[in-house]
Image 1 (cartoon, rainbow, N blue to C red):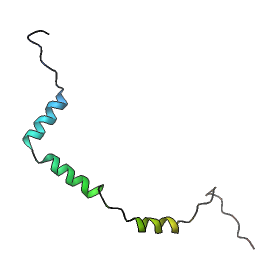
Image 2 (cartoon, rainbow, N blue to C red):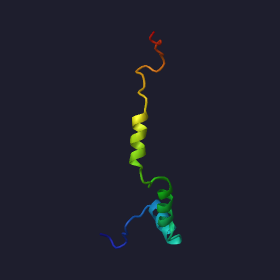
Image 3 (cartoon, one colour):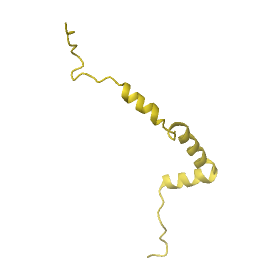
Image 4 (cartoon, rainbow, N blue to C red):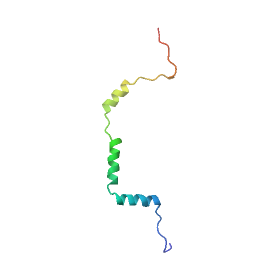
Amino acid sequence: MPLFWKPYTSDVTQFIRQLKADKPTLEAEQRAGRALLWDKQLDLAAQAEYSDAAVPQSPYVYFSRPAKP
């Protein structure tokens, strides 16, 4: 290995490292933002009710069957 060789770091890696150094609370803010939208507790009872109340769709939705007399 030559004496002048140094490991390569991409511009993106350098940017992210600099961003994290400038704003140390960034990861905590990202986790809080994720918790707002994605990390939610599911209500399994409500989901079961929704699936039980679902009306089955007809195989061909653009054709309405005539009512049976």
